[in-house]
Image 1 (cartoon, rainbow, N blue to C red):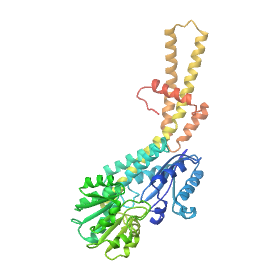
Image 2 (tube, rainbow, N blue to C red; image 1 turned 120 degrees about the horizontal axis):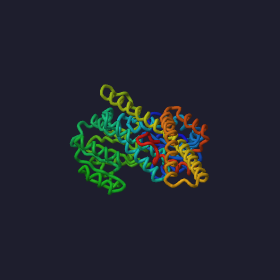
Image 3 (tube, rainbow, N blue to C red; image 1 turned 90 degrees about the vertical axis):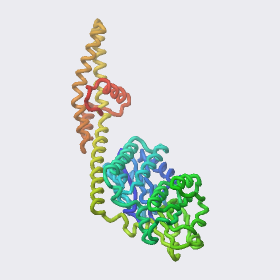
Image 4 (cartoon, one colour; image 1 turned 135 degrees about the vertical axis):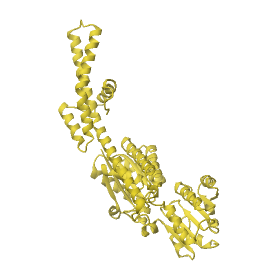
Length: 445
């Protein structure tokens, strides 16, 4: 089985296409199960955010996996495959590890250093675990990606390599409205991006914040945390009248703030709307209204925000994070390759244990007069001899297996000793024997 990742992001596709492909809620669960049900796929995890849709799988064949995953992504999104394929990227084996680690560190974000992706990868893994589509391989990969992302954020200044999408948006708001302190803001949505938006508004000096959400309890919880006020989603139009800044982050698949709603609002001055949702929450038609400015993901993308290389300290922070990714990818791949030889080593020890058992049984049959104490001494001596003979080859093959061509060493071992590492009884018995009788302090599988 091999790792395969297929996706598209702000780097390869326009926002309009990302908007059509993005999945959430029940649609995400269905795509997760449909991909995992394919005969070529053993495990599946999907990362679907405002800026990317990526399907991570463990497959038995590269071409079969690519064909199946691409076809299902096209079918679920309603985008014809010939229109979707030019925007897709495909990563295989080592490339998958490097890509996910890079994403988790915020190095592939629209704004370099964006930390929101860590929580999104965590949510993607949790969903795959809950739905039973993530097995050992993807669990280990995603868990390590989360650890690498945390390390990059704690050991480097990658967080400062670029402002968050919210920070970029509010900088644009200041250009339109002037200083934000004392302004009134309306936050539509109560998810993680909305919470980040509200916290950023507070840091900017905005003290009058209203939170609207479909689930009032979630809106109230967020509002309490920032000293704001919660309202029902149906009250958004009424709240537009007093707002200077509106940040919307629901992405519910339909317009939440229509041009007609904004036109009817009795505004006291300029209105700045920041739409961070995918699909769009705000009707692009509001741009035609006097005194209204709308910034959304598409306009950020077109302006190239976060896509130009940072300089000075920011560039050094990004380089440091990339160095961490390179180091962690190497460590992960070496450990993963070494783990592949474990069943072969276990099968070798099982074969040796069977030989010892058979020969000792033959000895007892031929010399029944041997007393129990002597029999025990003979048994321990023979086992020690076998363990010492096997120890150095097994340690070496584990070490050699960590190299890029490591599979060849395990294959050679299987051929030389006619081993079958898939026999479950052998794996169970020899695995226990290796733990119990292996030389103390030596390298383990």
